Image 1 (cartoon, rainbow, N blue to C red):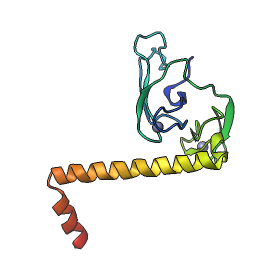
Image 2: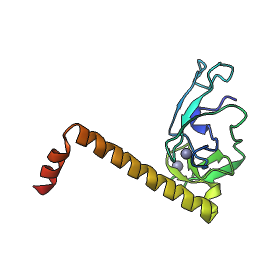
Image 3: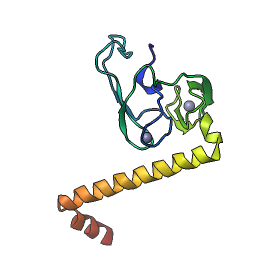
Length: 142
Ligand SMILES: [Zn+2]
Ligand SMILES: [Zn+2]
């Protein structure tokens, strides 16, 4: 397997969706590809729910389908089960082949909405803890 990290498609054990990872931590080869023979399996962060999980060559999904980008019309290889796909040409993340199923599409948008809400609440809590909440209120009142 010599693919770059953003093609590490695996089903997320937390949200059950397949999409391009938001980030990946892995042992690399000098050419930038993943070193699968390392004792440390790659750890990826789910691009949908933010869950951190490891991938092995066994739960890695085959790029057996093709996604056509709505922005640049570029074709990107992806798993047929992908709800989201990142365009290899322009980087735009669009709906993948699995999103033609309404249930998958709804789960995808709901999961992303929940993630944004959790991120928002985390930032708010951090600001409150740092005593910045009052500053923010004054700014909006102006
Ligand atoms: Zn997830
Ligand atoms: Zn594109």
